[in-house]
Image 1: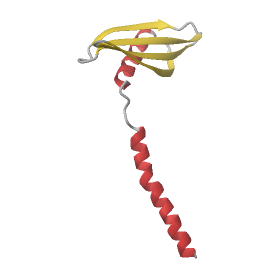
Image 2 (image 1 turned 135 degrees about the vertical axis):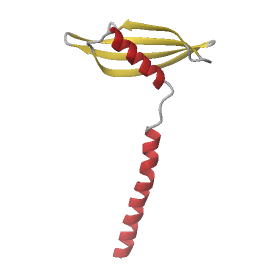
Image 3 (image 1 turned 30 degrees about the vertical axis):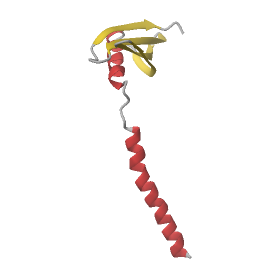
Image 4 (image 1 turned 45 degrees about the vertical axis):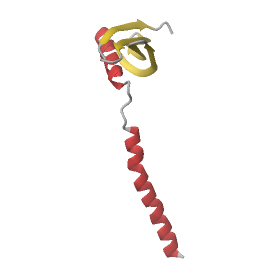
Length: 108
């Protein structure tokens, strides 16, 4: 009976060991918008150098003909206030050449 218990325990441990690396690899996949998110963060840090970015949200993308717009909202904290900044990055879908970057402070 004890041998059966140990065998079952061993099988459970083996199953966890095998599945854990797969789960870790799935979590490590880089999202398609990561490149644009890094650019959004860089632009916000340039405009607000003293602010700390405390949150980040990819709001999706819009495709308009040959152009794509990636949309982000970053939440910033300065000593005297917290506020959001919307970032819109427009680029050529085929070449990924940036056309325009817009930053707009959130009113809420």
